[in-house]
Amino acid sequence: MSDTIVWHPNYLYSKDLKSIDNSKLFIECLEVERYLKQTINTQQDSYEKFGSFTTTVFKKYNLFTFPCIEASILYRQLVSNITPYLDKNEHYWIQCWFNVFREEESINWHSHWDRELKVWHGFYCVNTESSYTEYKIPNLEKIIKVPSQDSRLVFGKSDGDEHRSSIWENKNKPRVTVAFDIIPSVSLNKITMYTPNHYLPFK
Image 1 (tube, one colour):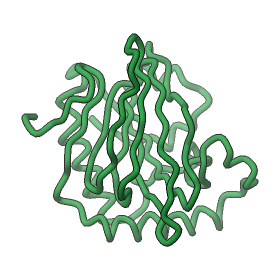
Image 2 (cartoon, one colour):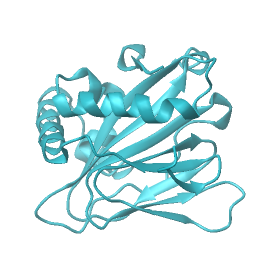
Image 3 (cartoon, one colour):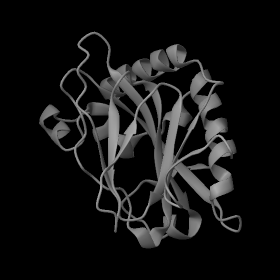
């Protein structure tokens, strides 16, 4: 884990992954986006909270259930790189979606899970250019700014933090990231608002 960047001790990390073809993963994500738009009905005005269609409907699909080669490589990389940080005595599950932000789109400050559920969350940068993500971490006055660069994996605890992405300014190509929550079995069993079949074994 010597190549890991520690943005905040025991809380927020990043690693640069080299084994994924981002140009192919970018195409896979846009193909899945087209499919989802054909099969899931949602009003565009509901995008305001989450910033994009694929983010708004994140509870209704899991990217890793689609037969996408680069996405499957990413799944294995997540397991390999994040498992050492997890409780070795616990079983975990992953919910994965992707964010497609076009010009002037972003996601504003938000949190994921309550801290007592001991969830981890993060994202992988597919096409992100000079954008960034900001984090507000409990008991830390300054905002942590994590630069987004393609092939960067950012992950940390869902422990009371809030985060947001910068506004995307490229009119020609969307910003694409693959996002995920990693949930211990003991916590997943307490959740009733999520559809269980959108969770896949992680560890």
